[in-house]
Image 1: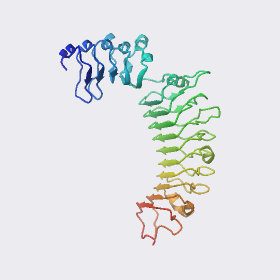
Image 2 (image 1 turned 180 degrees about the vertical axis):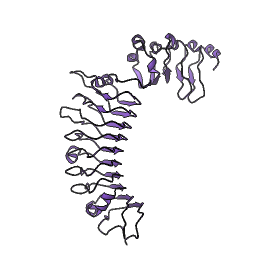
Image 3 (image 1 turned 120 degrees about the horizontal axis):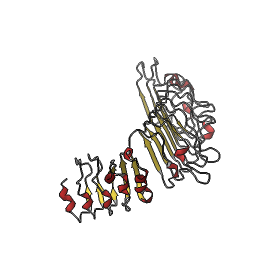
Image 4 (image 1 turned 90 degrees about the vertical axis):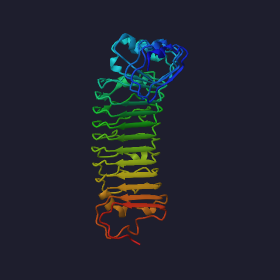
Amino acid sequence: LPDLLGNLKNLRYMGLSGSGIVRLPTTMNGLKNLRHLDIRGTKISEMPPQLGQLTMLVVLTDIFIGKGKNDSIAELGPLEHLGGELCIWNLENVVHLSHAIGANLRGKRNIEKLELRGGSHCSVLPAFGQLEVLTELKIECFDSIVRIGPEFYGSSSNKKSFPSLEKLTFSSMPRLEQLMPPPIRAFPLLQKLRLEHCPVFESLYCGGDEEGALTSLHSLRILRCSKFISFPGQGLRAPNLRELELRDSDALEELPKHMNSLLPSLTELTLSFCTKLRSFPEGGLPSSIEILEIWGCDGIESSPEGGFPTNLEKLIIHSCDKLFADRRNWGLLALQSLSSLRISGSEEVLESFPEETLLPPSLNSLWMGDFKHLKSLDN
């Protein structure tokens, strides 16, 4: 863009999203009436000097922090009207505490979504737990973080940690091993917890209310955490948990203890390529489960104690040879709500399939696939 752009004194809106622009004019500080600057998805990697003079800005999608005085994070300080979404890049260039304080992020009350991006050198997370109205937090690609502990929760004896947080995600953290137990008063409203692609993450601990329960948690997903090995020793106390998904957890040998009593609201359970799982938990699965998917768990040898959940509506079993061999004990005829059944990927040599006592009359959808050695279908 030409430097003459700075002469457009009445310009209020500049939308450059998705364009090939690589540099903003050095005269940008002359656009005193500019309200909206959208540079998402451009090739811009540095800001023009003295951006802080654009005090009328309401929307600034991105800011790239430099190492000089005129492009430091402190340029955000005078932009009192900023709101909506803001992404701050190159945090590794913030080397002076005075510049960070000068940005006055605390005073940007209208910002609804803040994205912070920097190098992979951060080894300790800040006290995000002190952000009282934070509802969603995603932390990803922090290569140096090994443990997440008290400094992250930032709680004191008279304050709750993460009092408004509803959704928490940890993703692509190659050295993360452990989440230290949170304070008792942490996460009172947490509904969704997701850990993804944390290859050395091992254990999950509960915090929550005085009884150690995550009372508001609705969804828990642990995906591609190949070293994940255990849940809390006394079971996962999440009375309102509805969805539990475990995928590519190669080290996991058992599901949470006492699932049938501690997870009374569970409606959807997905187990995918948890190759060391040998059985379902003692006492069986919660009867509330409506959707059960089991993919590539070839170590599971038999159906749950007491049979599959009585409220089951959809059942998927794929590439689980030992479990499939136990199909005569599945007890599907007793499942009056089962309407969808998908079975696939068996290496067993079958003369005929399915057996007369396998399929319930309630089915309206049946899918069978990858039966390489099936000779005939039963009438």
